[in-house]
Image 1: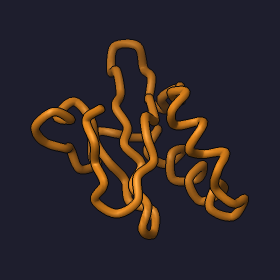
Image 2: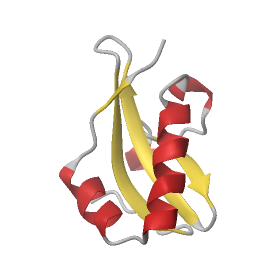
Image 3: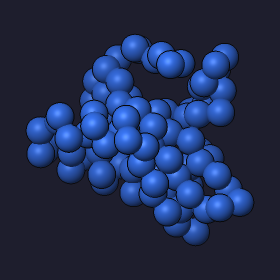
Image 4: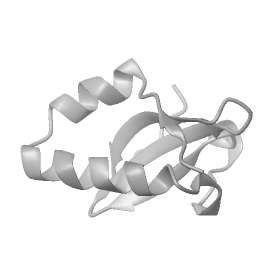
Length: 85
């Protein structure tokens, strides 16, 4: 079952700043995540409802809603710059 992808405004803003080749890699990986988001690493503490995927030195933070069948890419971070705000 494939999840519908519903990016947040913050994700879209970060995404537009990246070069085209990196955007393509991120799109491909998010589509792959949309097939089974439960298998990816979950975060801890304030971000415990979120998971992450790694694409080179970038991390894409995302969450998903199983009942609504939606995947929410939330933020793009470099390295370990996770921030709960």
